[in-house]
Image (cartoon, rainbow over all chains, first blue to last red; front, top):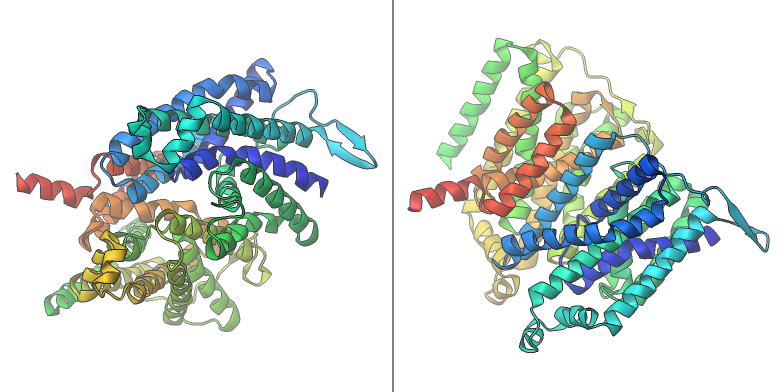
Length: 280
Length: 308
């Protein structure tokens, strides 16, 4: 139960990028989990070569992933959005990207499980008879920190408000003198950077293999849709719900069922209430 | 129509002749995979290319066909034709189900839902011990196959299935059904307003597509003789099902066939000469290159060159 709660904070971190890119920009970036994995492998590489803390690496690498995201968006924009055929071919484009990144990772790192070392991994704290492992607590706290930071960014800063505006009315934004493509590039970069940082959290929690990304497609999109497409507090709430349901399922029915939870939730939410819990 | 049937019969006859010749056994082994992809790509294209609903859940339908076959083998040792029809029908039911899903989900949401479907189904199979669970299960081929080897026999079976699938796709494309699907692909609301029965057409497309994907999966247990969830639900099927029609061209029945033959052959060669990991990498790169640079596929390129 507690583990589920902590896992929830982490799931929220994982899904923030999708909330921005899919929820606000309306770009179905299926490749998002691949960037999560890229972030995880970046943290792994720095950890094994220079003994850097995985989460610190994650933060250090965010500018790089921001640029990567900006480049991906530009390619996407030039090839699809400008021609007005974004939805279906764009989806295929991102699916191909997901596949390329996954296969590249397995060519480079092989299909063995990779994990990181850090001082706090393996330790735990005792709170009223419940042991809380630091490897879960730290990612959860960072995840909540990311959620708060993104919430403040979107609500308080000029660029943040512009991103919210682009999701509502593109023409009005253009009339106000801001370039929607520029704003969307920033938002896409932020989304990818958030995914890479979440990847560093991922490798802290558990070892990764290149095919881990498939497990997270469902979790990311389930959390985003359940949270109401682009609502940041909704993403946190949905992440916690997903984490709890998953850990209950794996306690009572065994861990092999836990993966079906996110996709099951996704299917049910899509079929019953596509607007999600916090939807407009 | 009559000419198409004649052409189909000739292709099958050619395949049987090839099977009698008993050339290098690897030819049949690789040919089966390529023909299987012809069926998969054609089936995917009926929904994805004609109706414009992108299905990421191809592995779900394929594996459902394969596992229906495993179940039937386990239960009554059913013969191959029963396996194929059975696998097709069960997959068709799933197709009908996702057809009703299109009532509420369009575009991107539909695609994500199909992806979710594949994972949920895989989890169910993993937890179902009767068909092998996560460990998988070996299947014993029936004795005394024609042409001396079972793989050669399966090659002719898959060739016939591919011919049937392509003829079904061609028939759909040229009938009023194809025109209706094209109308709803371009603008679903407008099509509905013009009196196109969109729901019935979508249900038809998802069911036929599901049936053919199941049919492609049904002989799979006898081909590999060991079925386990990871190979039956491989993401490769989803990527290939998408990539092949995209490369060939999605608006015509010949597009997926061209794509499947080209990409399938290239993959077989790459698997032998380089490595299977790298060949998947190539598929991904080719897919992305085509959607970015040649969104109409090879057919579109040819058309553009002729136009000038």
